[in-house]
Image (cartoon, rainbow, N blue to C red; front, side, top):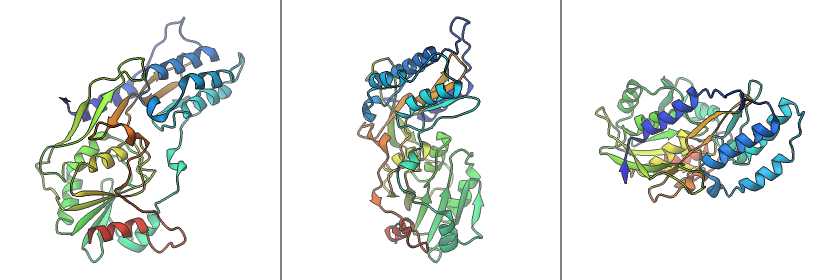
Length: 335
C-alpha cells in the first residue's frame, strides 16, 4: 500500500477543477447540441468513478437522452437534456454550469429533514452561544457536555478556533459535534479538526483515482492518515451528529470518525459525496464536473458513497418541537 497525504491529492484536484480553462481549437468549438451531448457523455463514460456502485447503465442513458435532441433546440432545452442526463448519476458532485443555470441532484431532499437550529438554540445552548470562526458552541446539561455546531467546511478552521473550544470543554464528560446539513467544503478542515482528537497517527480511509476508460480501471489504493496535533487535544467521548444533508467533506469526517475509538456517529446516514470532483468545459463553453475518485473504508469498500451509516440511528419527531431527539440520544450516549 502506498502511503500519501491524501489532503494534498484532494486539494490538487480541486485546484485543477477551479482553475482549468479549456481552450478549444476552432474545429472543436461548437454550439451543436449533438456535439456537446457526445462530448459530455464520453467524458463521463471514461472518467466518472461510481457507475458500478450506483448501478447506472450509462449506455442506456445515452440512448434515452440522445432522443431528446434536435438541431435548432434552444440553450435552455439543451441544458435540460444535459443536466437531466447528469442527474441520472444521483451525485451532487456532478454539475453542469452555464451563465444562466446550474444543474444539481439534491441528495438532501431524498430523505426526511432532521435538523432545526432554532430548537437547538431555544432548548439547549441559549441565544448567547459562542461563535469561534465557523463553530457555534456552548455548554449543555449543567456544563457536563460541550455542544459544537459546524455547518460548513467552506470557511477556514484556524488553530485558534480549536484551541478555544478544546480548552473550554476539556473537563466535560463528552463533546457533541453536530455536522447535520453540513454540505462540505475544504477537505483540509476535516484533518485539522480530527488532529485534535487523536494521540497517534491514525489511518482513517483509503482513496483511489479513476485511471482509464473502463469502469473498473483505477489507480492503486492510497491511505489517508490523521496526524496528531502538537497543540492541546481532547481524547474523551465525541458524538458526531449526521443526517442526509451531511455531504462531501461532512461525509469524509463521518467516515474517518469510524476509525477513531472515542468517536460515535449518531443520527441518520450521511448523503455521501465521497468522490472528489474534477471537470472541464464543453465545446459551447459550459462547464461541468463529476466525481473522479473513490473513497474506501478501512475494508477497502466503496459502498459508503451511498451514505455513511450512523452507529446509532435516531430521527427527530416533528410532532414535538420542544426537543431534538437526535441530540437527546447523544446526551444519553455520553452520560
